[in-house]
Every structure is written in C-alpha cells, then in structure tokens.
Length: 511
Image 1 (cartoon, helix red, strand yellow):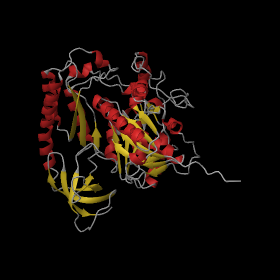
Image 2 (cartoon, rainbow, N blue to C red):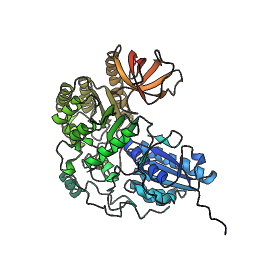
Image 3 (cartoon, one colour):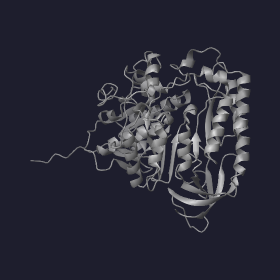
Image 4 (cartoon, rainbow, N blue to C red):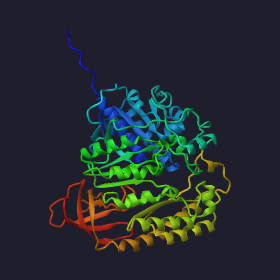
C-alpha cells in the first residue's frame, strides 16, 4: 500500500500597513500561521497565499490599503498566488464593498477576528509550543507600517466577560460605537485580546518589540472612527503583560514599547488606580530590559504617580508622546477633547519639572471644520511657547461615520495644506535650535542598521527617539570599532545637528 504524503505547508506572504497596533495584529496572525506549519515570505511573488493587513484611519491610509490590495491581486491573476486575504481596519469599515468590488479577495478578517486567519488560509490549528515568540527575519514579511469566517470573535462570545469602564458604557449609550450605516459591518463590536500564550512572529528585529496592553477606545473625539473599528476600551490582564514582557526579554529583546489607543487608561476597567504606573514599575524591574516606553498619553490622565514612575527608573525612557490635536479651546471643544493652550502649558511644565530632560512629542490636526485663522494663530503661539522636541501635523480627514462628518464650516483643502506647511516650518526652526544643544553630548544609541541613503552611514536611535516616528541619528564614525552590529547598544557622542536629525561617532560598545 502506498504511503500518503502529508499536504505541503502553504507559503504565505504578509503585508502589514498602518500603525504599531496593526503591526502587532500582523505578528499575531503570522504567529498563528507559523505555528500551524505555514511558511512566511516577504516576497509576494513567491507566496501561494497573500495577506494584506489594512489601515483605514484617514483617507490616505485607506487609499494605500486599496492600492496594496489591488497590487497583490495581480499576483493572484498573473502570478502563483492562489488566495488573497484582506484583514484589519478596512474590513471593519468596508467588508461588503471589498468583496463586491475586488472579486480576487477570497476572505476577509476583521480586527476582532485574528484567529480566523487560520480558517481563511485553509490551515489547521496546531498545539501550542513551549514558547510562543519567534523572531521574524526581514525576508518573511513586508511591513509598511471570499466569505467571512464563522470563528471570529465578532460572533463568538468571549470565554470570560470583557471588563468595561463606566465611560465606555456611557459612550455606548450615547451611540459612540454605532456602525449601523456601515454596510456589512458586524453588529457586535470586536472583543478580541491576545495574551501571553498567543504566538507572535516579531517583525521588529531582535532587539525591539511592541506589546499591546489594551485595545479599543472609549473617548468621544469627533474626528476619529477608531472606536467604531476596534471596539470599546479593554485592558489586558496585568499578569499577562508582565509574562509576555519577561518572555520577550528572555528571547533577547532589550527595548519594549507599550502601545494602545490610550495607554494611560490602562487598568481602569480592571479596577486598577494608576494602572499604567503600576505596570511600568513592575516591568522596569525585569533584568535585561534596557529601554521601556509607552505610546500614547491622554493629556488629562498624566498623573503625578505616572511621572514619578518615569523619573524613578533609569530604564524607562524619558520620553512622552501626548497627542494634543489642537490648542484652541473652541476647536478642542468641537473635537470633544476639552482644555486649551493655557492648561496644556501647565501640564507640560508639570511634566518637565517631574522628569528633567524628558523629550516631548505631540501631534495636531489642522483644518478641522470651523477652524478659523484666529484658531490657527492660537495654535502657532502655543507651539512657540511649548517647544516640543518632536511634532507631527495631520490635515483633517473628513471620515464618514465620525461626529465631525456632519459638521458645517469645512475648510478648503488648499487652506488646510497652507496651514500645515506654516506650522511645520515653525516647528522646523524650533527643532533646529533645540537640536544644536545636543552637540557634544554622549548618549546611548541603539544601532539599527545601514542607512537606506548610503552604506557609508548607519542609523540609530537614542531613548529620546521612538521607533519609526522621530528623527534619526546617523553614525558616520565607528571610533575604534571595525563594524557595528544591528540591534546592539553603543555609547556615542553627538557631533552634528540638523533640523531633525543628528550625526554621531561611536565612543564605546557594544553594551
């Protein structure tokens, strides 16, 4: 009798778009596929199954997602791929339209259906290994920053009740999470949360990793549809996060970035007071963890205890990202954010007094409906006074389903772009002056690899640079070393400063 050969494991190509939270979702789905025996490739032309994990935060992100899906569809119609799966936020918003308008798509997986990737790809679940974490090589995924599965958590109730915050329950009563007008959107909001036993393939190299400590959002911001896409705010168990962090460090990870839509709400649904501060304090004790940071901080939840914890531990990065969105009280009121320039300046003073030398980052939205020239002047004066280390500016995106979509007073696109350019030019001058103060300082630098511009330069970061989003440190002098190793830490002296980037020479290491 002839022996029947087992089916060959499929080769899966993964393209991840969008924010770090989306990247963690991709790592989880890749981990599930890897554990089930699938082989991962970063070359779409080699893949039998293609997965695009999409973003739909603003119009430009949605367009990038659609363009990428169509590009991958060509590998199915003209190449070797036999299946195309679309995952992520775009699925939550346009589930039926994706199926209808892109017939090459075989299956869709929403933000709360990550485990459905196995059924969508046609591979079977496998027993859990001793360690759920594996380091993903650069050739296995491309990161850009059919029928719906029945096994997703949209349809299956959670094993245990999902905790909730009073604020979230109130927002739900007020209709914050409604998706009634979204054709094809599931009625039940996503409830999924991965845990420390969930497999992940890390796409961030051997030294750094993200940990998602919470999912969803309860805030009422009128410019944003993320709560509709990802559901109500929910925290992971304290012990689960700590266990995951310990496992990652045991695997060689030395930098951990905690992420969530609002990490400063962490633990409120679990009955924890100052939950983020408690979590940071516990994680900072892990031996071998060199850098620990978190993204993002909601301004009215920056407590004294949180700042005290940041200042207390040397391995907690002296870095705070506070997306303020605007400084005009009238615009912030329309955004349902509250506060204004004066209150924000007092908050920043409190932060700087509690944590001397801390790097501060923020982001703003210009062109929000009803924004006037006077509102922009308030914002510009605030930027001059605040002197942020890092600053990003988004142009308002009129998102259907957001509260602001129905607002009158829409600002012309040309005016919005002009306001953005002016604000960034203002910040450029502030940044240039501030970066000059870095020259001569000796700092610890994480070397990340050769520069994309030239192999003669290496790129790295200090604790004052978050992954991907801030300026770079270019290393043009290796000191006494013949070569550098990516993912290792070195001491370096800053020798030059430009508008946003720095130049350094290695003085010692690796550490």
